Structure formats: structure tokens, C-alpha cells
Length: 85
Image (tube, rainbow, N blue to C red):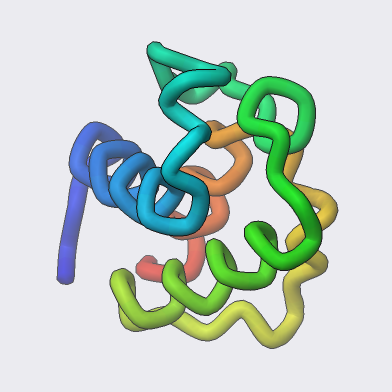
């Protein structure tokens, strides 16, 4: 799947909402500046789910990535772009 930044962010938002249905309540507008822990309130389980879902949705491997280094959705978008290149 070759995607642009907007498409990646849209898919990432879908993943987030599936991982934690209440994320939309905590953060009604998600963009690249949205902080994963602070704004979305993600737990370690949600972070793990997000990582696995990114691998499946974008057909990439995150073996060498510490998901705790992803502070914003923009960080995740850049990581996905790099892995898809």
C-alpha cells in the first residue's frame, strides 16, 4: 500500500479509534500534533495494539522500533512513511 501523509493519518486515526473507543471523547480532533499518551490517554496495551495494527495495515515491520518513542501522531506517520519507503 503506497499512501500519502493524509491517508496514513486517516488510517492511523481508524486504528486509534478501534484500539480505544473513548479516544475521540478525549481528543475530538486528531492531527499530527496529537500526543499519543497525553491527549489520547493510551495505555501500554493500547500502544501495543497500535504497533501491531500499524504492521498489519501498512505491511511494515516495527522490530527495531520502541513504540514509546512515538510521542505524537506525526511521529507515527513519519515512522510509517520511512518503513514504507
